[in-house]
Structure formats: structure tokens, C-alpha cells
Image (cartoon, rainbow, N blue to C red; front, side):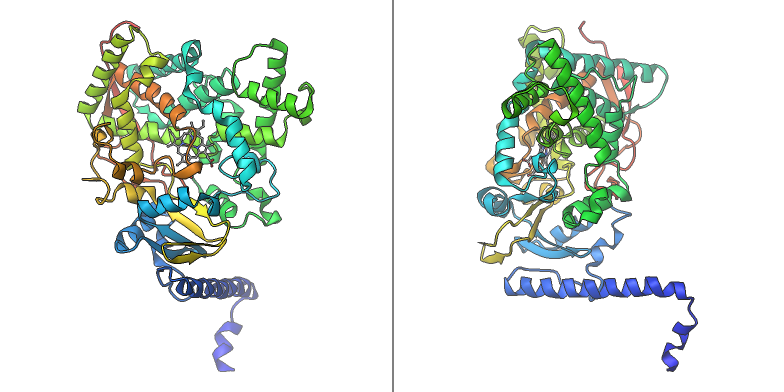
Length: 521
Ligand code: HEM
């Protein structure tokens, strides 16, 4: 057999990768051809995958963020409301039109209930983590239990003092960097601010990330750190969650859970001893413990899987939360550094609102009243939405817009693409906070804005997030003039990190500051 002769001269070790590679290609082919036949039958518009190797759009993933190819598919299929394709071997249906997104994410919510990060049914903690829960009743009951935590009024009055402490620490850090002639790393400043604010306010943990890096902060950072490992764990969570051998790739690693468990246990125990009701997450968890077991917290076993899941929903914001605050804060400061006129408007607003409330420092009432600053934050969330994609998975077969979808079909929405579509936002690449002013905000804009998701599973922490962001950005811009250091032009999708499911800028976001003369605080 002459044609096999070249193969016989290969070292035996090379046969193994060759065999594995060939099996993968055959597997790909089977996946593609089966799913394409189903799409054709259900009249779902799709992009024909290339024989064996799928869609070329995604070959550059690893050097570019997945936003880039998804956005290209979005733009090349203007004539369609939805279009199906493969990301590697994962079939997805990209939903383009806001009307259809609303239909699937809100009106047909019951039939496409699961998110892209849905947990394995056996994962007892993740079932109580809002983003990952796959049981509608458990999810509903958990969201109700947590709703008092998402009310911004929790930060009013004396409780705002904890946020004010973070403002003062941030000013000190920024002031020192300025005196030493160093630029400000906004990603780091925002991480310290949001971590300390969240852990102080929700679980009464007195952290100071500028002085000491808590284990939980290091672990939280590693949850969002871009890299192949995190990207693979995201893929394993999305695609292969029922395979026990992949437990080690769980999106929330066991080390994080163990550390959180021990912190919660300590805080609950201490609260029992102090007897002070602070109306925070610790009190909520103690209440659950009393209801369920009618006993005091005194052993590790008492911090149940449900409690860990609920705490994760708040503290890591059901995963996107803290990351979202960090990204949104650094993006907002980056964009304001390029627009001194908007910085000036924020300063004037702060002065006016302080005067109105007869305040000489940042208070809950002042921060809640910063309307123009909120418009700037919303506009930044439009230009830089946090998630590469929003996902829902069909939990039963259903029909929509003359197409029938099977249980297990994955819907994907690209907030970045919808937000930059001129059909919904005029001059979409321009930073124009006034498009979100109460006067200009029409239904078209409201429906097409996806920065916090859509439907009953949309972000419950948006108000808390905006409160912290307004405190951080408002106080920074009020005390300092901010100028660009590292990014002299507005960033876009090519500036996002390639190896993460979030739209994180690939470099540090550095700005320079010049102190301003302000009224006494
Ligand atoms: C202001 C910054 C924030 C942004 C831009 C943001 C964005 C998002 C997005 C896009 C989703 C997915 C929604 C969907 O799939 O339809 C989400 C979900 C979620 N967010 Fe946020 N978020 C922010 C802050 C927070 C904060 C501070 C918390 C917690 C206190 C939080 C808690 C959650 C939770 C628990 C979910 C899951 C909801 C569910 O599946 O029921 N978020 N967020």
C-alpha cells in the first residue's frame, strides 16, 4: 500500500494526536450536520458552517474578544431578526431585534428560563446563586428573599458613612499617586472601592484593600481574571456542566466557597454575640438559619449551601456584579477624561445638589440626586456593556415568529452590537449622555438598552451598582480634574481582552489627575 508509506515513517507518538484530531473533526461534522438539518426544518435562518471546521469568524478568538466576530455576524445579517451559527461546536441563535429579545427574555420567560451559566442540577450551592439557578421555584423564592438587599435605601442615613469612608480612602490614594507623579490605575481604584464597599455594607467586614489584600479579594479577582483557564471554565459551565469529571472547572471554585463559608460563619457568630440588627446580609442569613433549624449558629455545618448561594448572588453579584462595577467605573472615568465638558457638568451638578440638600459632604441623598452623572453611567454602559453576550436556554419546545425552537436551544444577544446599531441609537459610537435624559428617553431607546439584561432575570443590583458608581465617579471628578494617560482615544471592541466572557479592557486604564479647589467637606 504505497499511499500509506509516508504514515509508516511517522514516530508512533504522532499517531495519537492524529487520531484524536480526526475523531474531533468527525465529531464536529456530526454535530454540524445534525443541527443544521434541524434548523432547516424549523425554518431558522442560519450561517452554513464550513465542512468539518465550522465558522471562520471565530478563528481569531484568543487574539480578539468574542465581541468582534459576534458583532460582525450581527452587522452582516441586517435583514434578519435572528440568525443561527456555531461557536466552535456550540450552536447558538443570535437574536438581533429588540422586539424579539423582549419576546424571548420577558414574555416567553417561562420557556427560556435558564441563563448561559446554568448550573448542574446536582450543584446545591449554584442552584441558590441567582445567575446559575435552573429551578424556577427556587430562583423565585431566592430572588424574593434577597430583594431587601437590593434596595438602595439600605445605604441611607448613618449607613452611608461606610461609603464615605471608601470615598476618603480613594481620595487619599489618588492624592498620594498625584504627589508622586504616578498615573491612577482606575481598574485597581474601582476594585478596591467596590470590594470594600460591598463587603463593609453587606457583611459588615471592615476591609481596607489599600492596606491589606484579604484572601476573599484575591479569590474574587481570580474569578474574573482573563485567561485561558477562566475561559475554559466558562465553556465547561456553559456546555459540559453535567460531566462529573469536570467538577474541577466549576465557574466558582471550591477554594472561593470555602473561604466565603468561613467568613460568613465568623460574621454570623459575632452578630449573634453582639445582638445588633444591622439589616444586612448577615441578619438575613441568621433569619434563615432560625427559620429552618431553630438553632444558633455555632458550627461550620450551619452555613448551609443555600446561604452560600445567596451570599454569592450578592457579593460576587451573581458573578457579573463586582466585575461590572469595576469595568463600568473605569470605562466611565476613561471616557470622561476625554470629555472635559461632561466632567464640568458633573461638577456643577454636584455643587447644585449639595446646595439643595444643604450638605457639605457626599450623602446618600446627594448621590441619589445626581441625574446627569447617572446619564453618563448609563451611556457608558451602552458603549461598553459588561457581558460579551446575554444567553437564555430553551427549557421547553416553543414557537416564536414562525420558527419552532427545541428544548436546549441557546439564544444569544449581543448588547454591544444592539447598542451600536444606528437603527436604535443615533450616531451610536458617540458618547452622548443626553440620549438618556428624561426628555429624550423614548421607548425605542428603553427597549434597545441591554446593559442590565432583560426580563425577570435582569440585574436586580443595578440601583445598588449605580449608587456605588455615582459615589465613586462623582467624588473623584468633583475633587480632581481627570485627564487621559494611557488611552488617548475612545476604546472599542478591539481593546477588550480576548480571553474572557466579560468586556474587560485588555490594558490598565490609566488617568492623570489635577486637584481642584473645592468647598470644604
Ligand atoms: C452597575 C453595575 C452592574 C451591571 C452593569 C450589571 C449587569 C448585569 C447583567 C447584564 C446581568 C445579566 C442579566 C440577564 O441575563 O438578563 C446581571 C445579573 C445579575 N446581577 Fe448585575 N450588574 C451590576 C451590578 C450588580 C450588583 C451591584 C449586584 C449585587 C448587589 C448585582 C447582582 C446581579 C445578580 C444577582 C444577577 C443575576 C440575576 C438573575 O439571574 O436572577 N449586579 N447583572
